[in-house]
Amino acid sequence: MLIRAQDSILVVIDMQERLVPAMQAPARTIRNTRTLLAAAGEVGVPVLMTEQYPKGLGATVPELAMPGAVVLPKMHFSCMEDDGFAAEFRRQDRKQAVIAGMEAHICVVQTAASMIEEGYEVFVVSDATASRTLESEQACIARLNASGVGIVTTEMVVFEWLGKAGTPAFKKLLPLIK
Image (cartoon, rainbow, N blue to C red; front, side, top):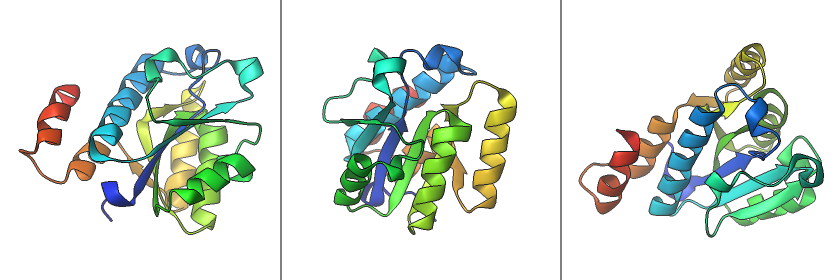
């Protein structure tokens, strides 16, 4: 199935000041998440961002600040177990969740699993998702793939949201992909 902008919501999980430096390939993860945020803004995809225990792990890294994004604190590992997040997610009335985040094997996998249980189409952006160890990232991707989650890349999401070349959105986003 295609990832369609009108059906999608972008969920950015726990990309926080004290968490990002401990991850595998943090620069790649942040760069690709910035591209996803730019694309979401360009094609009208709503964005929800979470912060796991912000008092201890800090705020979302400044590189990912986006006007209009809803940033929600949480304590549960699965975003869907947090009443504030779950209410806002459902309020958006979208059937597809595109997820980027940290840590892949904890909060990303539990959130994706909860969304699948509720009947949503879920896509995890592998090059915008990270854990502290490569083994944890690989286990997360294997588990999600086996459970029906679409494993995608940043470029896959951007080009599926765009749908065609030659549009003003395409021309604006193309330099971020090249």
